[in-house]
Length: 126
Image (cartoon, rainbow, N blue to C red):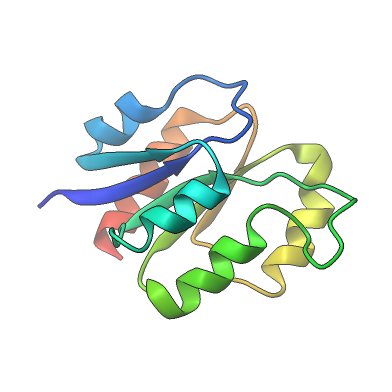
């Protein structure tokens, strides 16, 4: 059974992982901004979402780019499994976000592709 995977790459700077997602049996839907990703959620219900954690200290009412996505998923797509990719230097800010919203897995850069494949396989079964 093929599941949809929403890949959100806003900043990039790491290898394109779409081939790995496809190899794990996912149909990839891509978004280059959180705004586009939120619009895609109106038409698609992905099994897995892989997104970068982008902390910005100038956000007034949010911790990161993921706050709106995670809040939306709670009502629109609660069964989606979220895998977060993050910079190790922002781990403390990610922990704050995880205190408010659950995620399936969090992987620091550089992404260990074996750990990513393991998370994708577990997400398909969960």
